[in-house]
Image 1: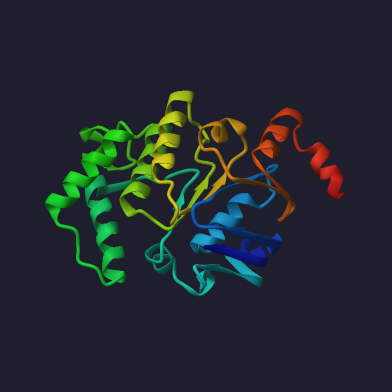
Image 2: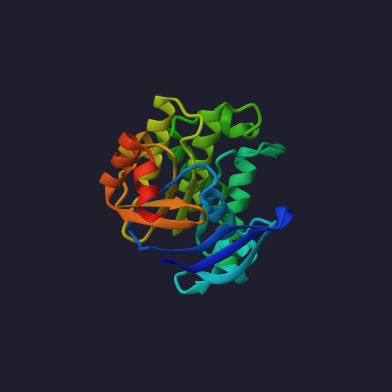
Length: 251
C-alpha cells in the first residue's frame, strides 16, 4: 500500500539532511510502528509524506497504491487516501468543527467524483462516530480544537480520521500528552478502523500506546534511517532496555 524507497530529505531552513535513505513498506491491513530516539527523523517522515512545506526530497520516492505521493499537492494526497494525525493539532478559530468535517468530507468526495454527503446523513454519521470517542455535542459545535484539552484535541483528530475513512493513516506521536483514559479512548477509535483495506503507520516513543494499538511490525529509526525491524517484542525490548543496545549493533 505505502512504499518508501531510499528516501533522502533535507530540512530547507537549516540546510540539513534529516532522512538518509528510508526504506519502508506498509501493507494493507497491517499496523506498522516506528520508534526511535529524539531527532531520528520520525516526525519528518510523516511531514514529508503528507506534503508539509520546508522539506526537499533529494533522492528516493514514496508511493501510495502505486501512485507517486511526492508529485501531489497535500490536498491531492488527502483525496488519494492519506491521513496524518498531528502530534500537536492546531486550533482554527472561527471554523466550526461540524463545518470543518463536512467540508473536508465533501472536498474529498468531489475529488474522487462522488456525490456530496447530505446534511442529514452527515449528522447521523458524525453523532455515531463521536459517541464512540466520547465527544459530546458541545465539542462538535465549537471551533476546531479551540479551548480543547490535549486529550480532546487528539480525540478530535481520530474523529476526523473516522469520518474520512482514509486508506493510509499516519499517527505522529498521538499519545503525546495523553493520560491513561484518553489514550485508551484514542486507541479504541484507531482499532475500530482497522480492516483489511487500510494501513497504519504509528509513530511513538512509548510501548504504552502499543499495548492498546497492537502493531504487526515495529521499526527502530535512528539518524534518518530504519536500523532494525521486528515484531511487537522489539517494542518491549526498547521499553525494558532503551535504545543503547540496538544502536550499538549498527554502530
